[in-house]
Length: 140
Image 1 (spheres, rainbow, N blue to C red):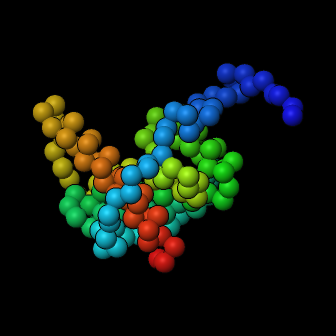
Image 2: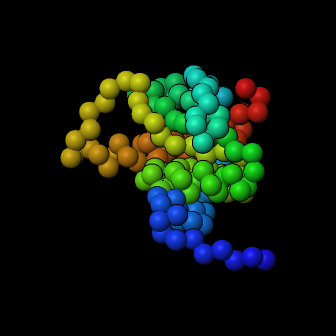
């Protein structure tokens, strides 16, 4: 095996060994097919096919779904997303996709009093979106 030294300049914003820093979900959530819907599919430079998943309930949060073709590509995308200070979510043992929060369709007020609750709601729903894709993604 050839060992290659990677300089900080070459590494840039990329996070090496991303799964050691961002663990996948292990506890399955019971989700319904009508909780989310696919609203758009785009090709993004250097990231391939990206689908947008929208929650049906207000504030209709939108999540990016990055599809990956291999474990190497999965680690590459995960490293890039972590380097961009995103909070990706994936299912432990499944390297076919990554979910990232994008925004809301409806306006919500975020302030110093409620920001922790808003962040917790985003995290919880992002996890539900990951399990939704795992359960229903192939049939859609």
